[in-house]
Image 1: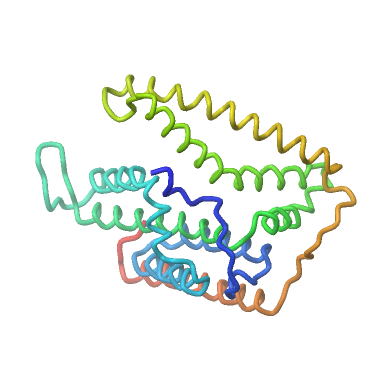
Image 2: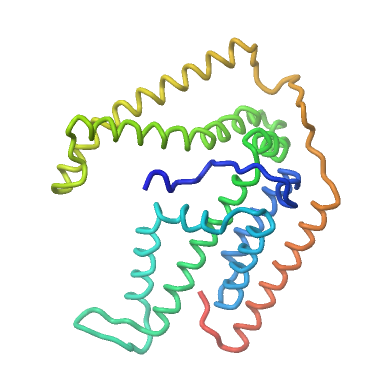
Length: 274
């Protein structure tokens, strides 16, 4: 399960999406998230999902990465689907005692699952195609206006990127600790809830110690390299917009407008909406 968590991983490439400016990728990702929550009918939502698959194909990221990244959150997706299926009103098509399943409930469950899947896969594509350094520079550039009200933009961007970068490292460390404890005879897969919770203590304590040790080593390494924050800092690669970024933004805005038009049309046709 831990190996299936792909958040924070970067896959180098030379695709159209890889070459885009990291600031534009963040802006388009935010627009895509807003578009997902704006789409309120099955046609618009599945159109946004199909667009996401197109992005993965263009970026040459294996589509199986979507299923791999969804495994850890599958219980949340199933729980959300059950809530929508069991507690939506309408004419029941299946009913046993207090359990009532309606056609509207099934439709809402499908739509919510599609929205969650697209949300996770869409945000994951940003980290798959953007290096941590480029992501830090982009976040800092986008939040730069906040410097005028004394917000430490550079430090915030650095902390966010370091946290994202160390997710795969901590997952790998957790895997090693679990294997070491199992080799010593620890049982983490049987017993009741409280017994399993107690079995996690020998994992969490070494993991926290390792995390604090890595943080201290990172701080020491940055201090030895005379790191003093973003003041006067130069970059080897400067952020620069190109024509491809403008084309991508126009394409996304057109699709956003199409989703809004689809919402209006769905209301006129009386289609079920979220």
